Image 1 (tube, rainbow, N blue to C red):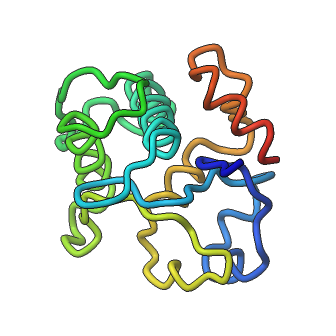
Image 2: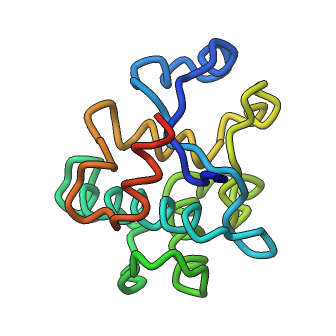
Length: 159
């Protein structure tokens, strides 16, 4: 069985390139990229949907920075269905714009997997690792009630 959207231990070479990930017990990773012209596998997309929704909810509550940021936009709801569409694309761009507004090159509209050898981590603006880092060490997506059952099962199996 091929598992997408998985939990993995953090390789030492990631910590060398991005020391802030060392505080995490694991990272949520993708098998394939999510975004325009990407494979957009269902569980990969669903993982990104869940992570973005948690980020947005915590940002609005103020725990991840100011909810009144000048970059804040209301872009509509985000279903947790694993379907890549314009809403998911808008949320990815919104997240990247919110965090990387001064670095246009970092706004790709894509979220790529973090390669085990660290080759994808050359740029300090790796969206997936940034999302993981913001969610923090206490977020267990597999046990959150809002996480769709099939994603929760995939995350539990992959540990």
